[in-house]
Image (cartoon, rainbow, N blue to C red; front, side):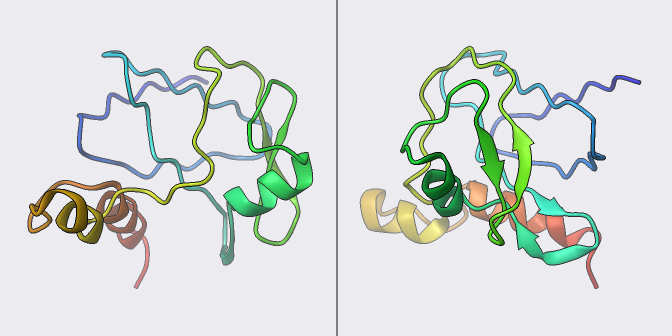
Amino acid sequence: MSKEYVIPACSGIKIDVKQGQNITVIDVEGGQVVDFFAEVAGRQNEFLSTGVTIDCNESLKLKIGDNIYTNLYRPMMKVLSDDVGEHDLLHPCCRPEMYEFFYHNGKGHPNCFDNINNALAEQRP
């Protein structure tokens, strides 16, 4: 079964993905694609870790065939294709404090940190 989600710019959603399913992320407008977060179903304490992913792949860059790892050093997903070729695994996602520090407009500025937390909060008490 295949589903398509169109996510407006400066927003985010939570999508449940089961083991064995594939995810394709396409930026229809070009440019910055996504700040992506994933957690293991039913285990909020195990989630995607860019630091562990860098460590386990022994590289700052992802390539086809690389695994993306959790904070507990377990493979979470695998890169099957890549049209972008360059992914930022070092910088944190944008957040109000970043916009305030660099641009002096952090209050109310749409940001990935809030988008991710709001999407996760929808299913948490």
